[in-house]
Amino acid sequence: MVLREGLEAALGLGIRSVKVVTDHKMLLNHMLGVWRPTGEKLAKMINRALSVRKKFEQCEISLVQQSQVSYVVKLEREAIDVHIAKSRAVNARKENRETCTICLEDADITKIHAVEGCAHRFCFPCMKEHVKVKLLHGMLPACSQNGCTTKLTVEGSKVFLSPPLLLIMV
Image (cartoon, rainbow, N blue to C red; front, side, top):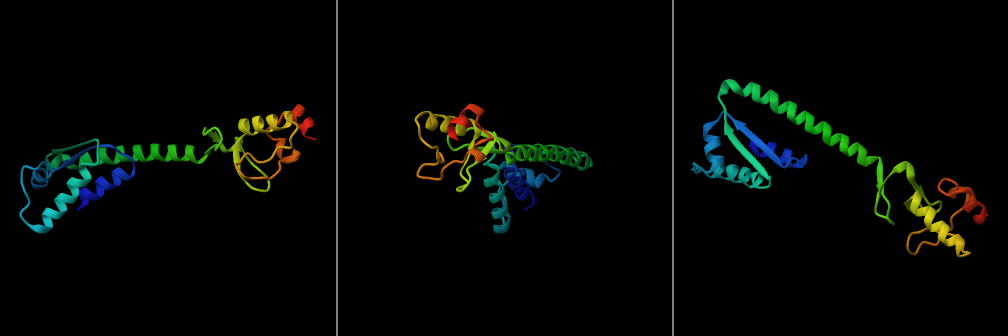
């Protein structure tokens, strides 16, 4: 049933509130529970659509005249296009960000350091603080990942360390 597939697609896009319009009075009455389907196949289709409908925070169903359907479909397509564009923009922003496993903050991927030798990844501020604490305690800094013993190099640390800390590290 196209209605069920449309509702599932909307859920897949993260849409939580929908307004369904139809020019088919029988479908409207079945979806509103006014009529009960008599055939087994129809009952299964309606029940599947109703179960998907329940997953929305809000799902209105209304009847429109056949002459209004083309206008409604045009508006619907425009609304879906806007939502898809917003969803893509959010996903694009997320793709350029990574969560630091130390501070659990999202950082731009250009501000994430991959430790040479083990490839564990942490944000620059966390790496700088980790290395600073180790150096001030007279220890050669290693990867921040628990259990990892990969030693940090001066060359690899130039990206996030200040010159005074680099001098201590040498």
